[in-house]
Length: 334
Image 1 (cartoon, rainbow, N blue to C red):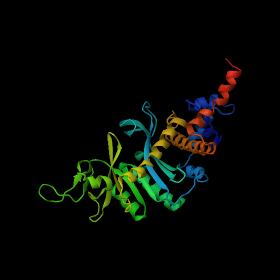
Image 2 (cartoon, one colour):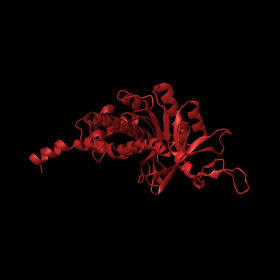
Image 3 (cartoon, rainbow, N blue to C red):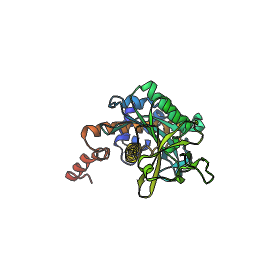
């Protein structure tokens, strides 16, 4: 058995992605053989880059996106790597496997590719999500050597070390701050003294709503300042975006820049709906790791073929059943 066999199964399967179902539809592979292959194999994130690099169209002003998602295992009881963690989709704690991903975006073609990933399992390797981001960032710069200008990430990653590290490497970043983060915008309190205020409680002049304001983030170096924008994402949601882009003076342009970050959310949604990334029922950590990585390899193949055929990934997945449906309508087997 080879990796391509398992990936082909994930590509064509519809709802049942188990080893048992794979064996039931294979003339040469048994459940035990499939299970041994997944248990003994050690698929690495490098395989994602090897699969994607031939298809990526590089751009000097490309974006690098970082975010994490939870592979839902809410009904599992003995699957390794599963832990309670916050899910943005569920807006609360769920049982699942955390996956941190790195996505490359070509703004000219409006295309994106997953180029790296890490499993969030601090009990196994002692690494935080911030450690995984730094590992992938270092790997992108020094090992892959691909050009990019701007980094987009979630508020979880807006730490001093990450932000100062990006500035040291000469990269632009756009990142939301949580509303309880404290900043100094130069205004004074009732006593006439400068003080730190929570971002969500700042006062905004009309000019500042259009062009943003300079702020110093609490516990950052004394002279370190960033541009802060108050961006209305929807009628009931506002984000406070920081950037080190000295040329950025417009809130609407900032909103446009940050909108690119949602491509990584689209990637996560497509992975969950098209590749069966959440459907593996095996208990061992190695099989879960190998299944998740295989699912991302399948997503890359879907993305490549969908671009060639000029259709969506969902249309491509659904088209796999077209011939079967047509043949059954002409010559019903039941």
